Image 1 (cartoon, helix red, strand yellow):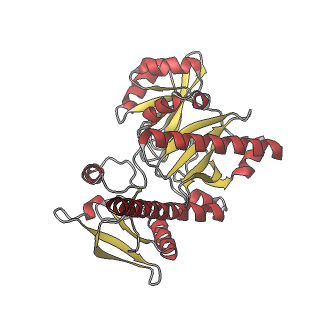
Image 2 (cartoon, rainbow, N blue to C red):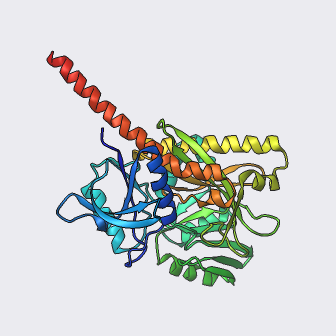
Image 3 (cartoon, rainbow, N blue to C red):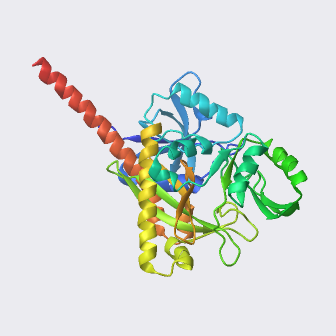
Length: 379
C-alpha cells in the first residue's frame, strides 16, 4: 500500500506568497512523518492550470527548510482557508468548484447569520444563543436595543474581532459606542446623541454585511472582557472529542478578547474560578459546556457535510449560563500553548492527522471489501 498523502490547503497572506500559520504547518508535517503520513502545503494558485499537479511547499524537519516540488494531488485535503476579500479567495472558490469531488477532511461552513438560524432550529441550542438579528436597516438595531443593552454589531464573515462595534444606551438621549475597526485598531468610547447614532451605524455597515447581537455581560472586576475558546475535533477513530478549552482576556479598553487583538490566554479552570469559587460548580459548567459543543459539532456536520474540527467561542455569565458567541471552522491553536496547556496544544495539532489516517484506511478498507464482494459474486 502506498504512503497516504495529506495536502494542507491554505491561502497566501499577500502577493509575496507569505504563508499564514507556517510554524503550525511545520509541526503538522513533522508529526505526520512520525505517523507515516506524508504532508505538504499548497494553495489554489500552486495548482497547474492544465495538468493535475501541484507545485507543493515541502518542509524537512531535519534541515528545517522549506522547498518546492511538483507533486500529484494528495489522497486527502485539509482545508485551512479563511475568508478574505482578495483575488486569492476567488481562486479558492474556483478550486473548490473544480475539485469538489476530491476527499476533503472538512467543508466550508456558512456565515454567522446562517449558522445562528440553523442552530436556532434546535430547541436545546436556542437557549444558548444570544438574541440576534440581521442588520437590514436601523429598525433592526433599535428593536434589539429595546430588548438588550448593550448590543454588538458584527460582520457576518468577520474574524479576529475585526469590525465589531458595541452600542450601549447610557442615558435618555445618549449612546456610547466603542469597538475595533477592520484593521483591529481599538476605537475609544464615543458618546453620541440619537440623531448622530443612525448615520454613524449606516456608515459603519456600508463596509460589510452585519448582524446585531445581544451583549452578554462578561466584564471582569478589572473592566476587561473575557470568554472561552473550546476546540472540538475528530479523533483517530472518527469520533468527535473536546480537545481542550481555554480562557481569553482582552486588553484594556477592548470589547473583544481575541488573542490576535492583543488578548491573553489563561487556563479555563483558572478563569472560571474568578466567578465560580466552587470546584464542583466549575466541573458542572465544564461538563455542560463540553456536551453543548459536541452536540453542536455533530449537528453542523449533519447539516453541512464532513467536518473534522470546530472552535466555539463561549461566554458564561455570572449565573453560569452558557452562550455560544461564534462557531469557527478554521481555528487557530496557539491559545492552548499560551495558556500553558501543552497537552491540548499537542492534540490540536495531531488529531487532524490521526483523523486523516483513519479516513484513508477506511476508504481503502471499503475498496478492498467491494473488490472481495465482486470476486465472491464472480465465483
